Image (tube, rainbow, N blue to C red; front, top):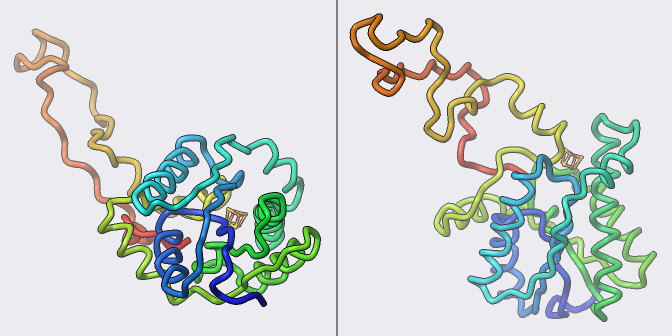
Length: 235
Ligand code: SF4
């Protein structure tokens, strides 16, 4: 392993983890530069939110950032093929992102790369380490596999303070399904009212109310379960 102060490319999967990792890397004397390549993030608006959060953070922190802004849905689904279940799909997902980062590091003259994936306690660290070193060997660079999971909570807190977007699920469309399938909590976010269970009164037929004056009905309670993770990020 190279010296910790070696300049390095940091694969950035999200702003909260990047934020925490950046602070620690700089504390170690390293000069990080970020690389955003995440074709696993779906759907499009979620991809844009996470990319934008990284750009906002990079600007604030004067962090060099190279971002692949292409929405990589097709490339990701092609790579996954039939391997849709965990842990197979996650290995493909890690390999895609780590290989792209290793290539980017090699082409940019960097000797070392690492990934914010190493911050998340919910990711498969063993697979990331194995695939990171394999990608590094392929492109003639080194993979810094330092365990950064202790940074996770600090990253969430820092993102909250900086008002950075914090994702609610890992990234791919399957992980979005796994996150929300047991809850209706997200249905009513954004100030939207639930659909009325009763027909609307037409003007002149009810008590004088039309569409514009219809009173908001209280939102139904979310289903019990996983809604307590609102506003956090575990990924
Ligand atoms: S769950 Fe996360 S790591 Fe696994 S394939 Fe989906 S986005 Fe990638």
